Image (cartoon, rainbow, N blue to C red; front, side, top):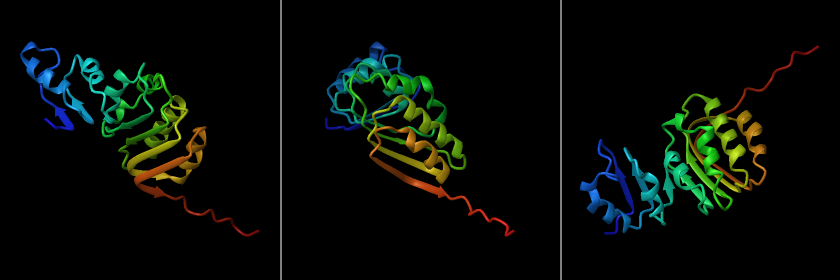
Length: 176
């Protein structure tokens, strides 16, 4: 099979239930670039067998990045913003090599502070990022960009995709 993207959703944990052994065997032989797992007790074992994965959700990435030589990471999930937490980003920093290319999807349609907090988490834990791509799917203010991007010490390239730039109105000073 030449399947590159595979998603398992639903109530069954196919990674630990013996009746799903044929599926586990087939999946282990697929050169996947994206694997989405829901209800998965043995996610780390399944993911570590997939050497060609390119896109992960943060919860799954935080299971397999520690101790692995990850240089480029593309996090695909952004709608579950509660999953962007300090513990998960800290685990991403435990790659045996520096993560220098990082991309992710955010979804903060009207709340600029969500984008600010996420950028702070990234800059705190993934300090070697040189190329940062963020699909914002919402607003980002000039102030967030000016405040947060200098925190990335190695940053050389930044791309914001689908971002609405919220520009502050010019200050009008009264004449004396």
